[in-house]
Image 1 (cartoon, rainbow, N blue to C red):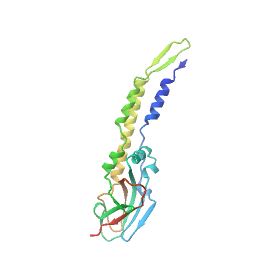
Image 2: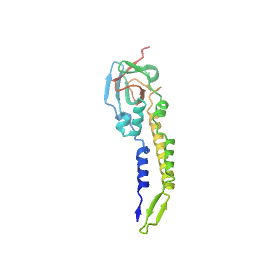
Image 3: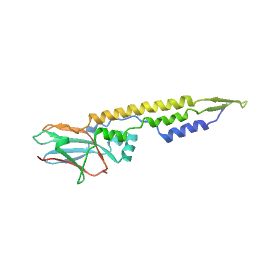
Image 4: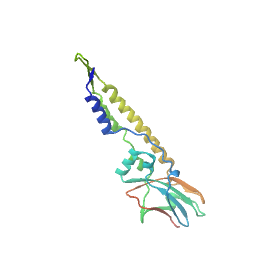
Length: 206
């Protein structure tokens, strides 16, 4: 029995070219801190490339395309007053004051597009043709399984990954959080339009 492999090669080519949905791997920001700065008010630690280091390639690619950095941070309050991150702290990249994106803004820019995987429904008309020794052709409509199957698998996978991504961003959001004297706050921040400038923070003096 001979099998015409053009259809199979077409499927593989489309899948490889379009790309598949990927799962989301947790960052755990408190374990990803490498750079430290300290002054009389705070100890500040941070790390770039946390998505990449966790193995989230698809999210890392979109992060680069959108010129956004997700950064793991840690702030220790050395003062005798409560620090509220959104009210009492300014963030700097180099000498430039920067704004922190909300989890919603950041997530919207980096989520996997679930609807884009509907593209795989174009595989539905695909047929596999086998030919026996008598040159009789047998047509197998494999597309009815491949098209909807690959589509559903990728949509479910991307939706699950996005939910895990959102959950980690919300749980590790430091905007609006307070830090009691002597306490440490670990979390994630997102900044648009910066490279790998050294980060620092300054307390806003009343």
